[in-house]
Length: 216
Image (cartoon, rainbow, N blue to C red; front, side):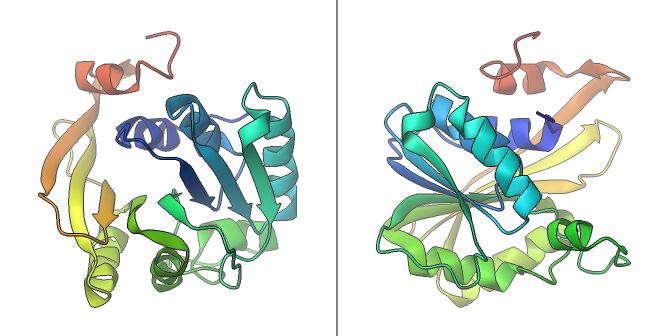
C-alpha cells in the first residue's frame, strides 16, 4: 500500500478524542481510515470512495487489517450519499487542484480536481452527516484552506485548530491542516516543519508521527 507523507502527518495530527464514528471522505487506498482505526480503538470507520479501482484497493486493505470488524469501504458519490447514521468526526485528505490543467485520464481527474466533489459539498456533507458536536478535519493547499474557512464560516462553523506545514524551515507554508467544530471552542494555531535537512525528518515531525512510523 502506497504511504503518503501528507496522510501520515494528517492522521497523526488529528486529536485522540473519544471519537466513536468516523467518516473518511475520498478514502483512496484506505490509509487514513486504517490510521483512525489504530488511533481510536472503539471507533467504527467508514471510507467513501468514488473511484472503483481505489475502492477495491481500500476494501482489500480493510479486510486484511486487524480492524476489519469495524472498518468498511463504500463505493459511492459523496455528493449524494446519505446515511441514517451520524458521525462525530469527518476527515478528508482531498487532493484538490481546482485551477490546474485537467488530465486526460478520468480517474486522475476524479482524484485531483474539484470537478467531482468541491469544498462546499464537503461542508454540506459535514452539516448533513455530522452530529451536533462533530468535527470536520482536512489537509489542503494554502489557497484551498482559505477557501474552506470561508465556506465553513457561511454555515456558522468554527475553526478550532490550524496548523501550517512547511517542507523546510526556510520555505513558506504550502499546506494547512484544519479542524472545525459546530460548537464554539478555543482555537489552536501552530506550524510544523517536515524536514530539518535534506532527507532528514525534523524532530517535531518524528515526535508527532512516531505512532505510525516504525523506523523513527
